[in-house]
Length: 441
Ligand code: GDP
Ligand code: GDP
Image (cartoon, rainbow, N blue to C red; front, side):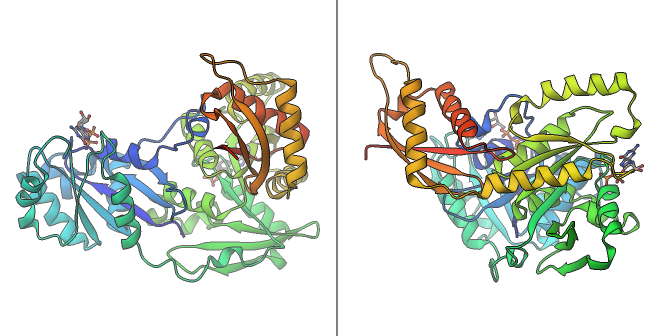
C-alpha cells in the first residue's frame, strides 16, 4: 500500500519547493518528457532502494486563518485538507528564518485536532544559526525535529529517512500480487472518461466469476475476473465502485487512489474521452504512470459518439499529444457498446508480455554492441563515451545496465537512440524501458 505524507504549513514556508525536492524524478529522461503536465499538489517520492510514498502539498489549506478550519476554497483545498486529515504522516513545515508566527500556532492547533502523526520540519535553515531556529520552535514540543533547506536540497535525504522510519508498518507483503496467473490491471483516468462504465461492462459480461478480493488496508479493493479464459485482477479505482456508493469520502481521494492503483497494477490502462482529446489532467495521469514505470495502454473511449470528421480530428490530435508515449498502444473503444474490448485486451497482453520479458545477458550485450557500432556517440568537448557491455537488471519495466567509460558525456538524445534501438530489436510495446549507466567495468 502506498503511504501518504502531507505537507502542511502557512504560505511561503517552502512547501512547494520541498514537494518538488521530494517528488521530482532524478531521471531527467523520465521527468522532463515534453507533453507531460505535472500536478503541483500530488506526487510520489521514490527514494532509491527505499519505500515509495505519496506526497500531497496541501498548499492552500492554511490560507488565511479563518479559512483554516471552515473556509472551503474550492475542490483542491477541500481535497488537500481531507488528505492531510487522512495522511499517515504530516510534515508541519515552518520557516526557520522568520521563526514561529501566530499562523503557525493556529495550524499546530488544527493539526493537534486531526491527531495525525506529525513531524516538525524547519525549512530555510541555509546560512542561519540552526540551533537558534530549533530553540525558537522548541515550545511546540515536538520530540523529532528536522532542519532542512529545500531550496538547496540540504537535509532532504535525512528527512526522507526520518519519514520512512515513521510510516506505519508495511504489514505482510502486498496481498494483491499473490496470484501470478492474473495480470493486474488498473483502469485510470480523470472523472467521466468512462471507467465505471467499462468496468461494469466487463464485470457484467463475467459476473458469475468475478469476485471481490478483500483488501488489507484502507479502502483497498480489487476484483478478480476472467475473460476468454484468461485471468485478471482489476485494481481498485473509483470505477470499481457502484456510482451510488461513491460518496464524497471516495471522491476526494481520487488522485491518491489513482496513485495507489498505479503502484499496485502491472498494466495501467489510461482512459481518454475521444471527444475531449488529451487534457492537462489526462497528461498528468499519464505522467504518474510513466514515473512509476508501468506498462501502459491508452484506451480512447466514447469512439461511438464521433462522426467520421471528428474521428479524423481526434486521430491527429491524439498522435500529436501522445507522442511522448508513442511506444504505448492506443486502442479505440466504446465502453457503452462494448466495442474494441477484444483489441484492448490484446494490447494489455502485449504490454504485459513486453514488460515482464526475461532477457539474457548475451542478447542484451549483443544489442548494445550493434547499437554502438551502427551509431557511436559523438565526441563531446574532446571526449567520447565508450560502451563496453550491458546486462538486464530488472523487469517491469525492463531495465538494462550499460557499462562503459565517460558515460557522463552521453547526451539525452543518444540515450533516446539506445532506447529506441532496444525497443525495435526486442519488439517491446506498451512498456517504458530504463537504462542505468555504470562507469568502468
Ligand atoms: P509555499 O508557499 O509554502 O509553497 O512556499 P514556496 O515553496 O513557494 O517558497 C516560498 C519562497 O521561499 C520561495 O521564494 C522559495 O524560493 C523560498 N524558499 C523555499 N525553500 C527555501 C529554503 O530552503 N531556503 C531559502 N533561503 N529559501 C527558500
Ligand atoms: P468515470 O467517471 O470515468 O467512471 O465515467 P463513467 O463511467 O461514469 O461515464 C461518464 C459518462 O460517460 C456517463 O454518462 C457514461 O454513460 C458516458 N460514457 C461512458 N462510456 C461511454 C461510451 O463508450 N460512449 C458514450 N457515448 N458515452 C459513454
